[in-house]
Every structure is written in structure tokens, then in C-alpha cells.
Image 1: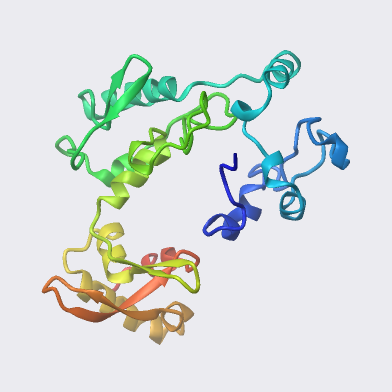
Image 2 (image 1 turned 180 degrees about the vertical axis):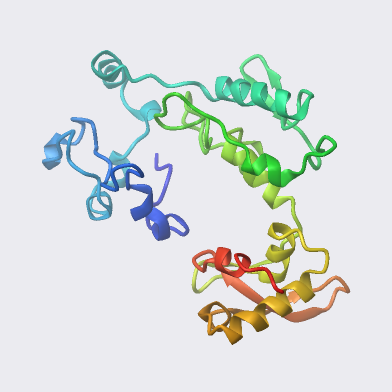
Length: 263
């Protein structure tokens, strides 16, 4: 069973960054004897080249390892895992306090949950941007189902995007609820986003088009290559007609577009 393809977008674009310890700036280690037949020790740094050279089926999460190996890792390394439904309870408990009500993202069942339908409603004086900026502290982290829940840690089954319960999953859901037009480039295997829509969401501008037009002019005058690197694609406008629109892909830094508001 293969849970992830390291060659697919967007994983392949950010894999080197994902393997880096943000404190030491060094690559994280394997921390297991499971790959000793390949000459890999627990202290061997994980590199892109090593991962891509390994059998993808050999890289398995805890749930797909043998029960004997799971038990050994628990005894030797105090490795445990938290079922997804418990992680959901943990996140729900925090959200109950933040929103001042229960069952915002889902309703809990005995050992599961039923996803809420419809757009998330926010309390007065709280906006979705504030929720995205909110911070949570997890004391310890293994496969990180508290943060992201791509698969169920007890069964290994993939969790559909709309039913995921991690804190980052919830924040991404709020961003996806915003009206941002997108286009998929099959040849490049890249998503492109309408810059004027992104500006409207992140900069909270009421007149998205004017904001982006003034900012684009200013960037040109400063010789900023952000504008030069922008592509133009025909996307459906509010009137239903397809119009040429500035777009940027996930590798282009939109933060540079938004860091200097127009004068």
C-alpha cells in the first residue's frame, strides 16, 4: 500500500524543505533500524536522493508496520500513536473555546466524526484570518495527525480532504472557502491562482482590481521581477465571461506581491 508518491506535485517541490530540521538547519534522521539492509542507520540523515532511491513500499507509516515492529519501537523508543478520532477531540476542544460553541467543523461519534456541511460561521469580532493566525502547541509529534490527517492512523485508510481533522486541515478549509479562481496546467502539473483574488483575500481589499493594478504599477517602477513572472490566463469573471487574468503558481512568492501595499 503506497500512501504518498514523492515524485508528484506539490510534494516534489518542497521535499528538501520538509526534510530539514528548522532548528539545526540539518536534515532529520531516519531514527530506525528498519532499513539496515540498505546500510541506513538510525543516525543517517534523510536526503531526497536516499528516499527516491528506496522502494516506495518500504517507506511505511507505523500502522502498516508489523505488530512486532510496532511493539519493539514502543518498548525501545517509547513510540506511540494517537488515533485520529482522539486527535479530532483534541482539536475540537480547542475550537469549542475559540468559537464559543461546539460542533463547528464536525460532530463527534463514539470513535469517529461526522463532518459539518456548509460554510463555517464566525463569532462577532473574529474573522477567518484570525483563526488561521492562531497558534496551537503540541507537546510531542510523530506522524502528526493532530496537525494534518491525510490517513487514519489506526487503519491506514486515506481520509478524504473534506473530512480531515488536523488543525492545518481546518485552516486550509477556511482558505479554500474564499472565492479564489484557479486553473490546473496539465503539462506543468501546477495550479495557477488569480492574483487579484488572492490579493482580495489576504489584503482584505474591497476593490481587488484597483489594489492589484496600483500595486503592479508600483512593482514595475521598482523593477520587481514578480510582475514579469506573472502569467495571463483566461478565467471566468463575475459576469460569466472568460477574461485574461494575471495568475501565479504555487512556487511563485505571492508574499512579495502583498508585502508592499500600494500608496
